[in-house]
Length: 302
Image (cartoon, rainbow, N blue to C red; front, top):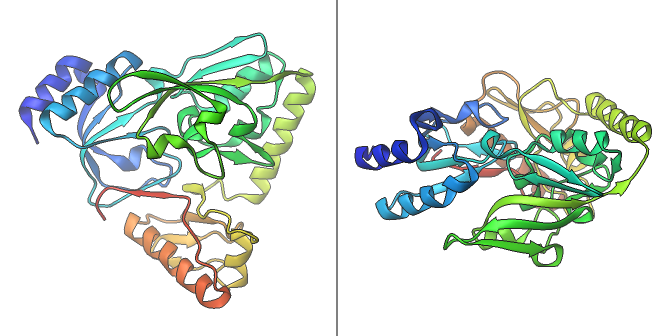
């Protein structure tokens, strides 16, 4: 622990937005993971000064949103974790354009769109992530993707400049954008929606919610769909056809309800989840010659 760095960090953010040895199990949807050495919740204006401080003291850093697509190692994270969440969750609507800060939950943005009788965002209403994370990964569900509605995004570059990126410049593809490779931080995004009927929009959201409840193991901690969709296949079916439904490593399990989900059934460690993911990759490749790629990102020390 660098006490001088910590003192400057607390001076910049205030002690209420700055934590040390913060359990990451509180911040990721798998509900596992060791502590982050430093954990901060900056406002939009504070992000650049925090990064400058990290650079000055040579402290490694990373950004998380709602923690819905991450697996943090049991030994935790050395350096600083920056949460873009409740301090940056403003959502506004002007005409048919919805603008959301990166920390806003997709579900909250979709609800606000519905209240303003705007359609196009219904598919995102049940995705358990933040706007920033959704843009980074081009999140999608039920036939919809971020690339269908994103108009532009504002990002912070490595050298601390705010930069506006058009949809084309974002290069959104299947679980891909230019943001990770360029080490950008999403600050906000604009979504181009269409006028619709409020009753029909809410009905569609309710239908999707019911489908999720029926088909997904929402009663257990997970990171949603664990694997990317292999070209020409469905991840869940490959896992099921490999005889892995209900397969368990410690407290981690392939969901019996939906084989595309790895769940924390009972006090799983991150290592148990990682081992289970590895076992699935090996078994599916052995049987079908397809190497599954995790959608979940592994961070920290295992």
